[in-house]
Image 1 (cartoon, rainbow, N blue to C red):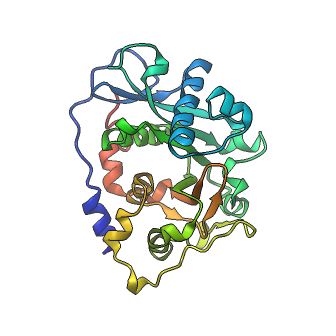
Image 2: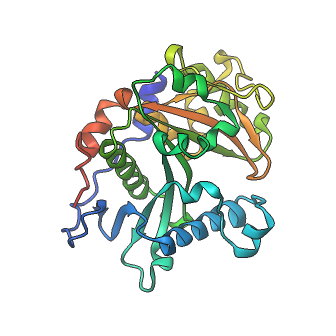
Amino acid sequence: MAIELLNRELTLDHPSKPALSNGNADVFGRIGSLETRLARNSREIDAAQSVRYRVFVEEMNAMLPPEAMARKRDFDGYDDICDHLLVVDNAIEGEIEDQIVGTYRLLRQEVAMANGGFYSASEFDIEPLLKRHPDKQFMELGRSCVLPDYRTKRTVELLWQGNWAYALRHGMGAMFGCASFPGVDPQEHALALSFLHQNSLVKDEWMVSAKPDLYCKMDMIPAEDINPRQALSAMPPLVKGYLRLGAMIGDGAVVDQAFNTTDVLIVLPIAVISGRYINHFGADAGRFAS
């Protein structure tokens, strides 16, 4: 029932035919004037950090280190080792700094392990998960944000087109990463968190939990007292987007005081991504490709 309701609520649109290629081979997809691709240079990464600052600090009241606040950029050491997925609106006149409207930060396991590990490991105990899957390469998704005027299905679809194409290009076996609820009081999200715990909790070989000293209980409301439609409506769009792809949720939430959020861990094995979405994006990630 819960999955059927989720699919009814989140039925994908079928956008107009993608624009013709302009010769950029690194573009993962296009819909209208929007395109998704990786950042090509430090200038574009800086612009993505500016978008992150506008969303996380100016909109969500995150408190970053003094240097980041002074520069009005959200940045840390992981930016130097990650790939940065962008959504660019080519209809906006001006420089690239004006055209980037959404971004994701992508970190492959081989890169993470060579540089001190994954970002999510500061909140969730992911090492046992990695050890149980020595045959799979994991990919961490982080720092996802979209400017307010672009929070549409079209932009989200392009971000996922990019993630999917990137995962295929690098032979990834699973994706994971933190997804955030606003605010630092998990009780304010008791309905949504309880629903996630009861319906989408990681199991068996995919089990992963918040670190014991950071663990916040998610299962706060009995299942019989939960209205699934209301629970889904109470979730951030990004979390619902993960669910419709077939994602599972780690055990326990974590409060991130600096970013003013309550985080859950998303776990998404490539093999369990819903068939209807593979058909939508294309098994070879070609649905919106140029």
